[in-house]
Amino acid sequence: MTETRVTAEDVARLAGVSRSTVSRAFTPGRVVNKDTRAIILRAAKKLGYEPNALAQALISKRSQIVGVMMGELSNPFHAVLHQALGRSLHEHGLIPVSAQLVPGESASGFISMFRQYQVNVVVLTSHNFSVDWIDALRNAGLKVVLLNRVDEERYTSAICADHAQGGYIAARHLLERGCTRIGVCEGTDGYWTSATRLQGHLKGLEAAGQTPVFVSKGDYTYASGSACAERILNGDLPTPDGLLCPNDLFAIGLMDRLRARAGMRFPEDIAVIGFDDIPMGAWEGNSLTTVRLPIGQMADRTAEVIARNNSGTKVLDETIWIPCRIVARSSA
Image 1 (spheres, rainbow, N blue to C red):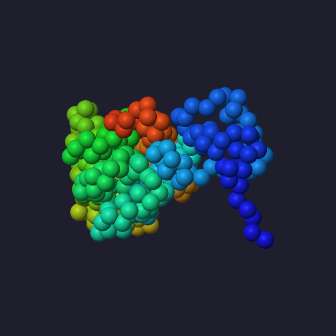
Image 2 (image 1 turned 90 degrees about the vertical axis):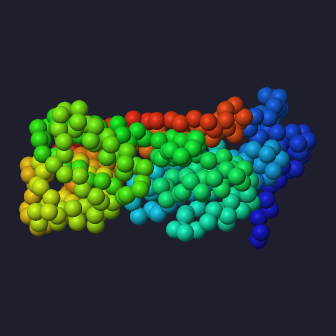
Image 3 (image 1 turned 120 degrees about the vertical axis):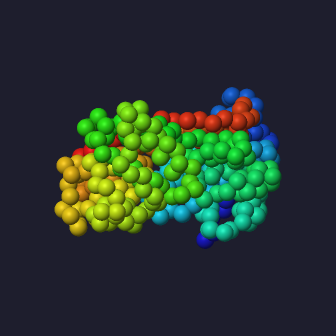
């Protein structure tokens, strides 16, 4: 037996009001008498009515549906960030429609999809999106918010962790623990986060009158950390007493390889600090000291900015920086 969907007309008949009044009662920002709204909500609850978000968007021209563009989710950090963003959007009455970017794919197909869903705002959460992508979205009339990245080429709204400050406090943490031969490993070449974290690491050392014993190229993968460990063990890089890693996956790969091949201990042989604070960093076998990105705060602020924009009280014209903090575990 097919269940009949409850409509706004059903609610209007039960509440004794017009269909348009029901629509206004469920549309954010629309004026409805307080007592009338209460009657409508009671009728809707009794009937089990849920408003149609797409229909509301067509009527009000203000969609509660938000496009979320993700890159590759191979790094656990991005999965945690996406989960937090989805939760925050729901808490602000917003509905995420997520899509994942495939390398080399153009923006046109996604723009068409977002238009079908009456999306007004698109959140970009990956570093794989080029300036051309941002331009294409904006030229299509979509507002763009960058989450955990910034647009250095032109002005685009952004909610971002202060990666330079995070790199700085990581360097200071090793110095405060007596490290004097500190190595620095870079993240993926061409990424804004890589350059910014490296800048913070170097400034933290420079403030204490130190220079790194090496700065090694790498990326944000477990394999890259393992490869860096091999270079240290083979003598291609000087052995440090402290190591600043570009992210947690890199740090875990490095520690695993140094343990397996040379039985090294952390921090007795080398103090290691990661970046991101992914869940596996806290595992007993890793116990990784790291820089925690303010994921929950970034997600909440992103949802707040979008909700304010949708209510018409504030345009998307701000860049918000949120500080990081050290999570001290046994590796450092």
